[in-house]
Amino acid sequence: MNTAHGVTWLDQTPASTRRVSNLFSRYWGAFQERRKRQRLRATLCDLDDRELQDIGIARGEIDYVASNRAIDSRRIRSIPPISGTDG
Image 1 (cartoon, rainbow, N blue to C red):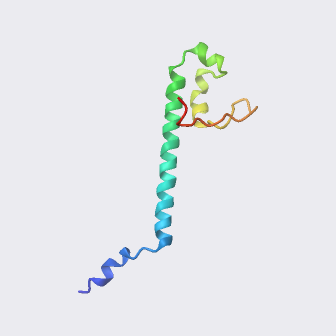
Image 2: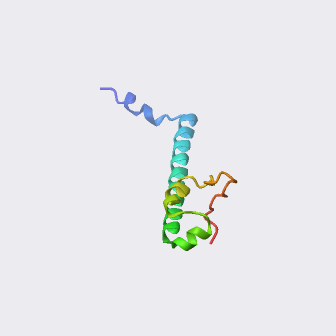
Image 3: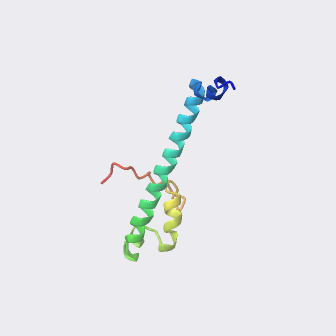
């Protein structure tokens, strides 16, 4: 039995390494974006109805706002993305 053919997967090309790196980067970006949406949803859910009214969001719109952070529900302007560096 020849074992040389069983190790050909070790001969990865730079292109295949880039694809794996790209896949991981996209996965990590999507994971981070999901965590931001979850934090935003939790923060909005913690507000009382008066505070939500002050920022122009009804309690029933929280899921929509958290899922579409860059879209203003009134279609007037874009809401700037929430960065992780803001306190």
